Length: 124
Image (cartoon, rainbow, N blue to C red; front, top):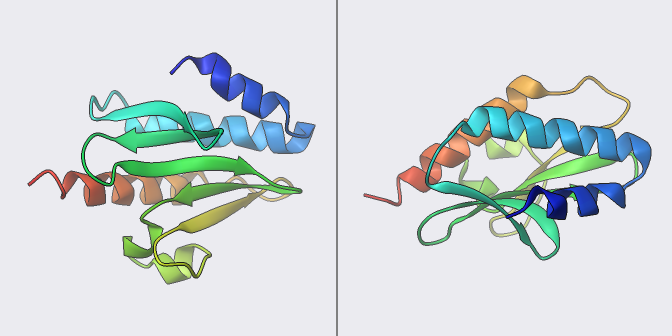
């Protein structure tokens, strides 16, 4: 996936949301490191990260007004999902990262670590 696809998506966001989206992307990249099983791509026109294997869609970024959602496709399966994220569907949960609040770097790192562990467990 070329970074330009992410940049094109981010360019369409308002300035505050764009800044948050880039911070989320950078936090994800830092948390994921050079994991060879995870790739960056676009899914449904949104920046996304995919874990190799079945049910590999891991997370994506989606802009909104005043915040950016960090969506976890299997978020309902993550530890303490109900207390850390929003959503009521079968699997998807999201963390709202508000433009006018402190950036939740530690929360993002924890969620990403949990998501990687969840997806790695499917390898066995």
